[in-house]
Length: 357
Image 1: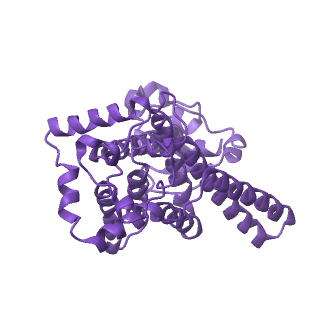
Image 2: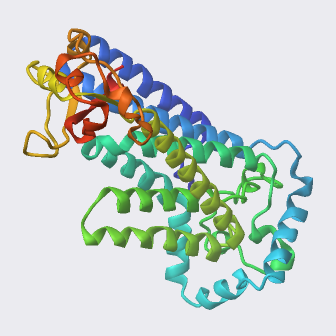
């Protein structure tokens, strides 16, 4: 069967061409061409990542000698923990040749076009979500490439598994003409195909709001079925890929929470009359709670307004630790009262938007 997938040389050429086209379009300075240039650059990045993945498949730091023994260990480990046998599932579907041939084609040509289509969809229609998922894709694929430098044979090359190479059986194998043991076949662990399929499903489910979005979950399920039935991956290959993707997503979530924590407004306490002065500025005033003169107020202070209003003085950063004596600001209105008569509710909380700093 003709290999419809790009090899790493072809993919590298496409990626370089897209990068050059992006640069040329950007220099034109026209808005439409600038948008096309951005899309071309992002496409070049993803195709370049694919080229790196294809190139890494031909490399290994330990050589192909231990690939079979590592595959044998995975097979035995799955049996020890009572996982269902891949051979049993394959034998269940072998009497259906059309289904097997469909799985062969699915494994050979579908995974990368679907990934590209998903990223284009995010870039064009959901730009706000695109950057996050692009980062997920790059991080996940990069980690998998590092792991795949340690070669692991697929179950179709493991004699003890007693599984049939379905692509060879139906003359659909892209490795049929490769002499000897092609290193590109020894990157079974983890399954990047399964990881990409889960990534696509997760992107669709979290981006859309329609109840039909849950149909995307079928994509990684079918992908897992295809890679196992065709004897290209063990169950554990897909499970490890899912775990890596989950770890990447968790790390991204942690980073986002830390960034939000650092950008939260810092609270300062000022007197009501100072807050009223700030409300006269063109930017800077927004009443959030309270409708009477004695109710607490929240005022969003513009930095320029704050600097230009010398009456504003911070009293304390933590309302729970305020001593009545600290509420004296030296203003006549406050000095006329006794310290015990000062009502904290008459003071406003000023939010300084640190995001603008």
